[in-house]
Image (cartoon, helix red, strand yellow):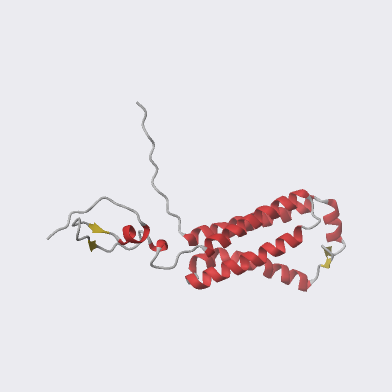
Length: 176
């Protein structure tokens, strides 16, 4: 006799998924850049005050900081922005960052290309979840609000989750 292991179903919200994807992208982003410090050619360019043909000065460092801060803020923004703003910001920023990451990977070493490909895949997932985010009152609100309705044919109550998501729960007995 074998006991079957049953796991509690896990419904992760779209906001949490998008936030986690931004977080994962930033980890890969940081580590790929840190690994560049192991390269002699990169360190030599840094010593000469250049990175990728650009002079390292206050404007460069300010621009780089802004470039890194925006996705860092999206980790939090994905959790708190209004849904419409959230969707637009995630879609637009996901595409823009994917384009800049692909452009930055041209001519780079294989570790950098692999890291960039993973970053782009994570950003594609951000865009996917933001694009397919169901409007309020549809699938995204399944299980959050239970509303009772009476089925004339069967005399049972159906929750909003059952009606909106097609999920069947066990019938409840109608009282009085």
